Length: 166
Image 1 (spheres, rainbow, N blue to C red):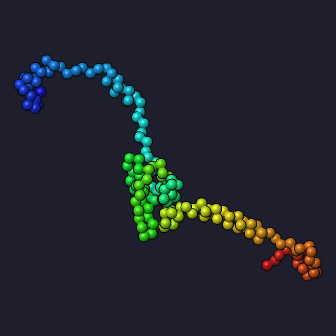
Image 2 (cartoon, rainbow, N blue to C red):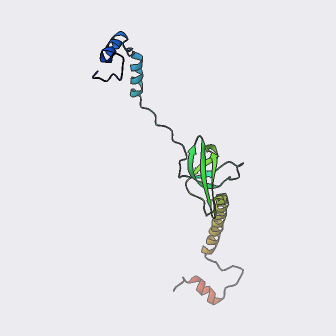
């Protein structure tokens, strides 16, 4: 007891008598089993939120005025997230529900956060220009053959049969 009674009436003797008279309850086996059960099974790690501060997010709710805007996640509390939109001469911090946001690997393609809306259009235009470029390339790579409708003069006939030399 070593004088650690803390002002118990009767001092150490009173504390000893009290413990003898009213012993502490004995531990039940159920409580021991409760301690054994979690140690035998590894606890599962907590599920991390899909969006963490500092990540780039995209607003996916079409009813929101910030639909398809791209911003930087600032804070998450109680199922809501604060997103910072940086646009040229204005910055705005807006709160959204987590269901309205989607994680994104890259930021907006330009300085304005709403330029993300134009990405599908730009991809479609690039695809069309690639197809046109491929057609132009295939057309320019073909070796022109003298049209059969035009008669060959003897000078051109000899040149057409000889391989090109530099």
